[in-house]
Image (spheres, rainbow, N blue to C red):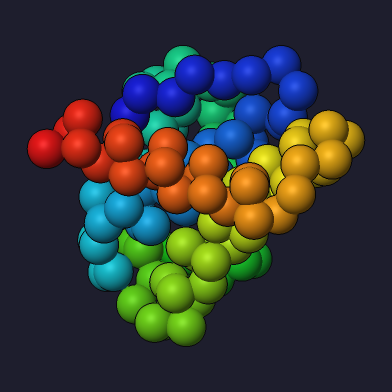
Length: 126
């Protein structure tokens, strides 16, 4: 569990995002047990209350569930799991668009550049 925390966002929300990213890339599977709150706090070197708040937030969003006296698990709800990837993608696109909008790049030029950069990264990884 390697997270580089930033100073902009609350740590508990960064932990939630970490879990969402792990779900989106398939590192965390539906129904998979996750560390206890205390264990997560130790692994990530955060206050146990911060880990507790992150788990509470994830439970409220339906990302995880906890049955009495059992470890918390990743949801098996396919709709919620599908929304995680979409949410992360929309968030990234929103940040990108707002950062390039100010330089008035025509959309076609922007899309061509994005396509070129995206496929160039694929070729480097191959």
